[in-house]
Length: 449
Ligand code: FCB
Image 1 (cartoon, rainbow, N blue to C red):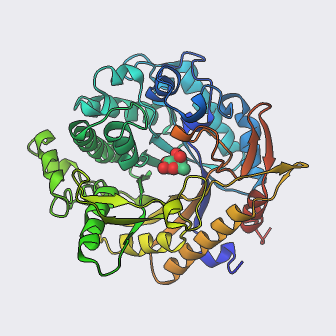
Image 2 (cartoon, protein in one colour):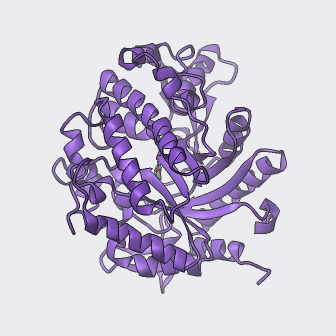
Image 3 (tube, helix red, strand yellow):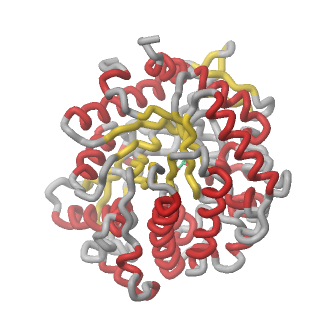
């Protein structure tokens, strides 16, 4: 290991991230309403092995011991999300006070343990009742979402100071409304572009609502980002494919937030998003966040593919390229996080960058109460080193959150890919800290104490 915590500076935010649907379970308990992930995994049975998040890590009940574990691991910042349908079962209107009380218990215990809560307002689990009215494709979502943000502020905003409005809008609109592989399983360009525009409006509007409530809040939102390289270097058509895929995957949501509009020039098909835009929307898409959250796992390699609709490009998967990859079939490529940070640093409107997710799924073996997850440990070290390299070169990166605290429900892939610093036995709910977790806790140990 070539770095210590101190190398990153005193202000650097070290943390760990989770999301409600992936860990909470208690899917229909204490008045919670159904979310699109409840129905996608139960009714539509779209998940590998028929898995669902009904119980997941049972964090809803186990949170006291899990927050204790965060403390034991010396992790000072905990990022988690609120389940919209737990506090507003129908998405709008009636409040479920038992759901509110649950998040209050989690937040209060965090603070008691000296852990700073970082709340993601929306991590993909839209209330089913809103989906029935069109969900993200319906412009009304702006009003529904605003009401939900106000609720979060009203009930939690006296103690929560760090907020992230959305988690990876490209993934939930792309996978959920274009490819249909994530909830709610919609497909097609119109659904996608409508959902994308409304999500982009909501990310800025959420920021404005939070800011209008408290100047002191630290407000951000998060984006997926993968560095993209051409299959054949200096091959003009592949290079053009890179520009298009990059516009779609990396710039579509970030640039309008920064006041630059949608990257239509580099991906013509995006011009069709104008069908969903009303006068004044361009301005409404922009908001000055205090920070942007970078979520990076890998890089992509693309080639020109004339028959592919809309982008004329295709992504060549890591196993096809025979490169080292994780259980998600994502190439292990630490330089991607460095390249992302360098590039984001060139956007003048970005004030500060936090890495709000980074991590890896590998085969883990629990043997005599230990998990020797050498690959994950190496992955984390190599990526953190790249973050330091960028910071030393003047990039304004000021935080790093591991994805994720403990093995959990990995969306369409179910429970198979394990990303945690902590191993979870899903039959017994037993937690075992992996070697990567022990290493992270050593890194974060306050030597001055
Ligand atoms: C990100 C998601 C997160 C997790 C990781 C592996 O795209 O934000 O919930 O599933 O991928």
